[in-house]
Length: 235
Image 1 (cartoon, rainbow, N blue to C red):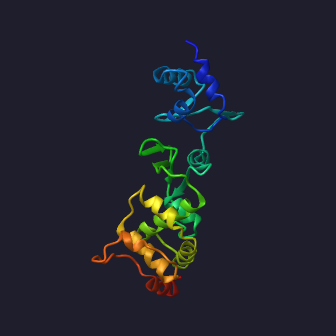
Image 2 (tube, rainbow, N blue to C red):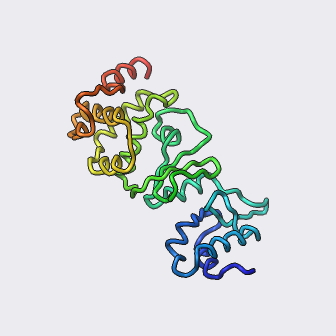
């Protein structure tokens, strides 16, 4: 049976090795033209014929060929599908490396993205977590800050001097609206918010993070004075 021309036409907008998120394509382009069952049946037939490659549940791409054979889908192409056009950002060790906080690397690349409908998706060595936000510069900056602070104690071989530089930049780029939008969408530990507040207060940046904290609790996290002393000793 031939592939449905309506589906083939919609798929024609994708380049070789460009990730195709099936549910998104259906909702945006095809839901009024073809039934969902017929749509996925067409994708299945195209995979069976070799026209499409399925890389994860609901995720496909057109294979790219060279004179040496099929060119595998790269990590960069997978990450781009979930981060381009303000749809997501890298987190985890890929982020820590980019910020020069550590030289340690991970075999897994972790991404936070609004492109994902389910909570989590794994494609090759890329793990994507859902975060339904528009990743503006301000949102992305605040997410980077919260992710680093939340995982500070588990970042291997952390460079304290680099962390202090990052903390200062984070403080002076603080965006209260972006911060509130993020924590209304994703839960971060109270100790993380307290750590953030400590950094902002240290640099004299006005904030109202205390409204998210209990005055009766003492949250465990590093203090800026301690970190400066540690950086002086260990670098």
